[in-house]
Image (cartoon, rainbow, N blue to C red; front, side, top):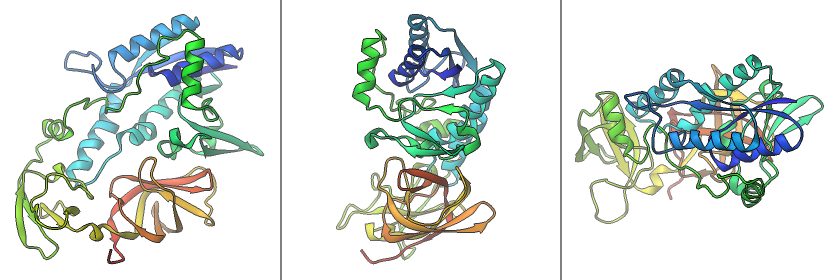
Length: 358
């Protein structure tokens, strides 16, 4: 089989290319250029750096497979970077990795695979695809500490038919061992934790350079009493504790961000308890199911038992069996039935009904 392998320059995608080549497949390596500096250069920190591209090229040469770098900087800037800035400007908490998968990577990789006469696209994500009587399902990886299904929730059964996740049954230590056995220079390379277009810089500074949203406003308590001032709502996210005024008595948290009035509301931890909320821009992998469901409200978070109700216009109402903390508007809620991923959507700022008193 002729397979396009998305190569990031890390150990995971390197091993995917090596495994598929050893299995007799015809492998083509492709790296996406997603972000560039003022002179067209690739970033030096974060993921998708110039050194990452060079590492991918060296792995491809070691494996003796064709390798290409393809430029998708325009699409990435419009669909991911502008979204990132816009979300913070609206007082929301973005997840650029999910947005990149949803708006850029998989659609472009699948399109490019067809142009290169490849039957499938393979990536280094830790997740599993199960063919259940010609219906393709997305499941959590066997080793849950590395499971990445959350960031793949937008993939439909139709797309999964043309995608492979070879690492879904392999642990990270095993992946590094395979890389070492194959003689790949990425065997012990550290995983990138930085956002490629922000790097090690403070995201607030990056946002400030992209759009003028740094107008000041008030920080208020639950009763609307002014207790401080801020330089811009983009500097805050719901649930944030650091950098808030007060310092006396019980710890304070950001509980609400009102972009219209430019007010940042703070309160106690109990004020963050949520049981009911909405998901926007909802998509499902297969047909919707409603029994025995759980939801993750952020990447690698706890699976929370829940009920769901479709309310139309791409929205879903979620009711947790028990109230929880850490439900941040702008992040994604991803729904599971056991290990099977059902679907997901963006947590809405419209309804955050709090319950419980601590």
